[in-house]
Image 1: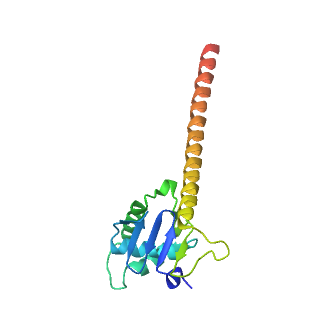
Image 2: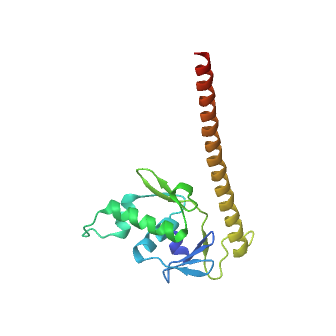
Image 3: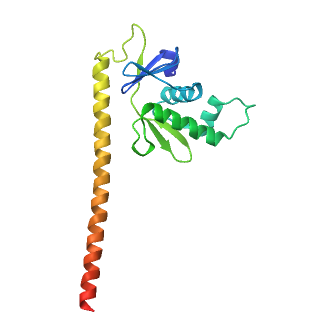
Length: 173
């Protein structure tokens, strides 16, 4: 059973995707998203954790009698979804690009339905869920910043070593 069949609201991070009213909310505030990018986001969230191929996206967003540049259309729709989620393909928290295949929604998704608690063994406060995901996201960003700083430090050390080697060689000649 797909996520959309189980409930009309899917929560991930600080966002809620209401599939029935076709709204994307961030911390309770509506985020503008055109119908096609909304369909794409709904598809990705509904298939969270699984690679959704570009062909599946084409089939979902365009009918067979539509004549457009599908690759450009998919790229543009992905760009609009990422902008709505403040997601960056280089530091992705929500949508992972799988080169030459498609896209994977990587954030944990909670299905919200009236009278049903997704975590029936240990009830979860939605604010706690958002706070935990925000913490996870911040940790991932901090790790990416640390990696970038390490790369920069390695380049600086390499340049210094090369300059020292050039200086020593020049002194010996």
